[in-house]
Image 1 (spheres, rainbow, N blue to C red):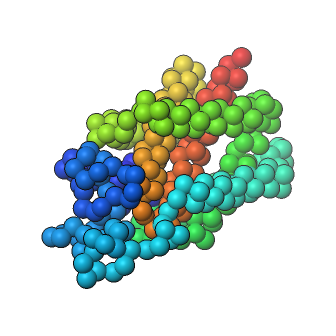
Image 2: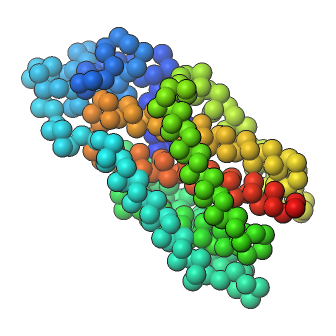
Image 3: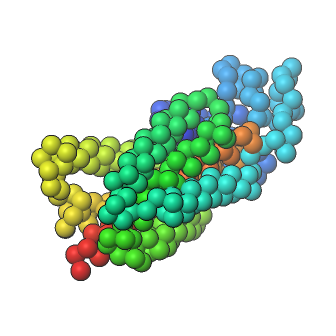
Length: 297
């Protein structure tokens, strides 16, 4: 089984036991061999330690030496890379807010640039998702173009719906992040194969419904099936935020596994990329939900 986040598609869950089967020795303080937690960074067959570059050197007979601890991913690495990636999103969003006006004369032009930036960000994200290793420049470029899109959309919503809705959406996103992090650290949320399956099924259904609604909107006009306004819009906004919270739990699990089992330091860029994708999802759903609620006032 793979993670729901495309940037973690090479890590995480296995088909056999929900969490990737043990093929390597965990780092000190990590789960012991034979427990339900497993090493998603294991490599090789036969002797499980023969080709695993993350296993300690004393269990790699004839194999390469284990990397120094300075070359292994830590929580500090994940935090710093995530701060850089999110900082790029915020910076370009602020610049596009001020440099791409959304008044009546410039709205069409700004919207066109925003849609173009969103498409470029999507392509960059997909390219990174299918690469075997993280490319920091690619990840930061994705963040920059995503920020342009978010800046224009946020400015438009703030201008035509409610001046305070963007601040509320940001605070709401931060609250969801903090709440899920606390719940995950307290083990109120346990990422299991059943949890993963439920989230994936719900996400696929949600995205399919949104795609159908978009088609009806494009070809039929109006609000399509009504998923973007009124009671249904509010319901699907809440569902979207809940799905984003579930994605955060899956992301936290991947980060925890990477730190526990000594993933290479460069993997922290993938962690930052995945967390940024999820936070952007939550922000957009929060912005849409608040827009509907305030638009109905």
